[in-house]
Amino acid sequence: MKKFFNMFFAVLLFIILVLLVISMISVYLKTPMYLSGYSSSFTMQFNSQFVVLSLILIGICFFFYRYGKYWRKLLRVNLILSVLFFLAQIYFTAVLFSTAKKYNTKVSFSQGLKSQQAPVKPSETYSYLTIYGEEQHIDVFRPEKRSPVPAIPVILVHGGAFIEGNRTQVGYAANWFKDHGYTVFSIDYPLGKEDRHNWESAVNSVVTSMGFVVKNSKKFNVDPDKIVLVGGSAGAALVMQADLGLRQGFAKSYDSPQPPLPAGVIAIYPPVSLSELWQKIDEKKNIDLKYAARRYLGGSPSEFPQRYAQLNLIDQLSKGISPTFIIAGEIDHVVNVEATRTFVKKATELKLPVSYVEIPYGEHVFDANSNSIAGQIEWNKIGEFLKNNHLEN
Image: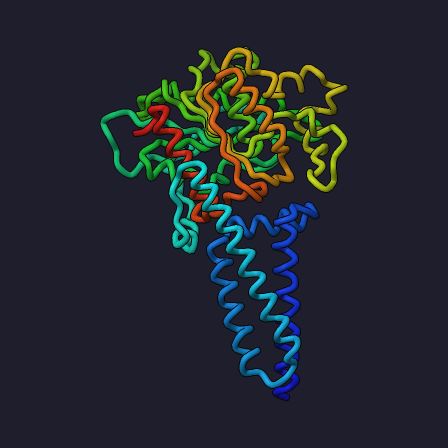
């Protein structure tokens, strides 16, 4: 019975270690897409925990190899695999610490071991717009310490490929900004459907929410001239559209007057070129999102060239841009990071105030765990961006 148990445990451990090592090799090679993507998500979000896990696995494998009497060859293989998994974790950890050094920010390995902070609850909720017969709501998160000086307002715009999601999906962002003295507004906006395309109404809703904050600035005790827009994924595209659209004239509030330009824009893995969704998809690098583009824009670039020309952000820089911080993952399979790099390069050539951070081996939503090393890099750089642009409370 003991021999059978040892065999079962050794084989089970072998299977687990093989899967872990293959996953890490996939991240390193950045292929195949789904395996490297999912594996990268775990590696980036739980890097510190994975280092600890690898040490535990080495300890277990060494113990059984040292004191086990049966299946010695398999136990030796398990020990070798556990060491390889540990070395992979050390490598990815070193890459992330090197990235932090590159961007001149400090990170902590031990902080990565902490559990994610639970999302805070809003102080109040309002309806800021009715469109398509639906009320669009806005959650307000007031800072704990009230100040006689108006706080800087932050508007959060959720992701979801323009067709799903809601204002409650703000993750750690509401916590961070609220804890740093900002008054936070998290908004809904109309979602795209087969029979309702929101390419215009979504960005206009963001601009309308800005107007709502301006109109109620005394009520919320915020500075109406220092609105900061923050979005992730589709939400990142929308906050950039709102800024560039206000400048170009294609983004308008459903309530007059128009709000002032945002004082700052924070775009987390933004899709900056929607036309590329219709180019030949490299199934090894990008997920096919044409179904979402149809609901959002109504069809292809050949069917609606004007819509795509308007929303390809890379073509909307001629009239400037508000101070903008962009962060992206190197192996993002949802958003084309090559287009993001091109956008940043063009903005830099035009001497526009755009700063950029790229996380090596980072997949879409690499920052889901804010305590991870990648998450620390992101929020440290966001804090630095706000400080550099005099947007601190």
